[in-house]
Image (cartoon, rainbow, N blue to C red):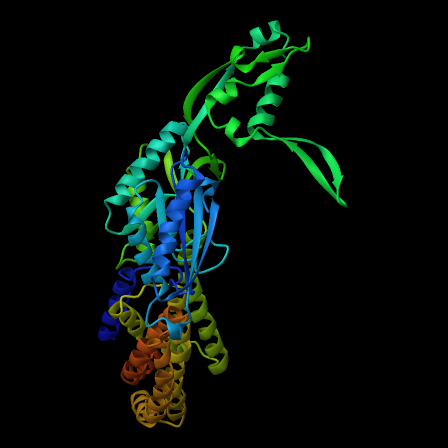
Length: 504
């Protein structure tokens, strides 16, 4: 029992040092590249950046197709945005190449683009939970510090993340602030010249943007008439000043007489998350670290920000946080269900307890296996732990069932436990060996979905090894100790015999 206490202590130590994650990053046969150039970049500059990646993909034998979308990205739409999907060939045509390796090579090829942000990322493990792999968070201004302070806090957090060894590729997930022209309208002068404010607004929106006029039939189809200034006539600020507006008398007044232009930097996006002004930040884990360690690192770095700023997780990162907090409850509930089923089967509390004590013997092997392979504690590992609970209890039941029958036939508890362990050794080894060898293909899986198969197979393989080897020695001990304590408690609860009367 002292050795069992040591095993439980090692199990607790292993769980505390086991890196956490949500789901393994699987090779889904493609990767995506997001282009986010400065806000003033034209469509031509964005096209040149995208063509650089297209030329690189054309030299890669494992990439089959390249699909480029200009003017749109996960951060927003605009002439400075772009998104490229790089599709890989089938597994048997890649010569061992993976989407992760190709994404890293694409990142190296686009590192020559110094302006803006270019990130080559894997798709998320679950659709609709984010736009890419890695973590996703929101930096919130809960102290109402203002937009300028929020931008400064974001830059500080990005600078701290760039110096960290746990995270990599942390970037702002949004359109950058850009140059804009603010037109101060002299309303008093406009009123004096007989120009309504609505007329100025309509002229600007119609010439610089567009204005819908009406519909007209054209060759059997109804089409719209939209008025807009020609592209060459709305490229410069002087073009805006050359516009004319009509006053109440029917005359034309130049725009330069009514407005004063002023250049300034303004945000192109305003994001709110849970009611607070926010900034979207995304990133990836550094090699050798898990997503849970990356989240803990970002939370630690966020504590160095000025008061009034905090971070919240979203998308797949939020689900990882929720699943991590629910895992202990799930494991405890699984063990409780097995215990109650055994209690109903044997109509006893002592025998199921001696069976359930075998569970840590299986878990210690599962934790040791994933630690040796450098794997995290993710959802599939937790599924494997639940499997180990049932399989380890099955091995213990094979011994306890015969020990219970031998004890009822008149044997002592120790003799019954030893005889049951000797008789059931071969069935335990045979059934456990068959199942353990059955999960070997999962543990050494390759190709599509190998990350998921290895995650669940490694834990189950290691857990079955220890649950089989250690159970043969420990289950008889559990049976003797627990049944001995139960007998002792029964004897203590029996009423004392009545004392005889001396006169009688």
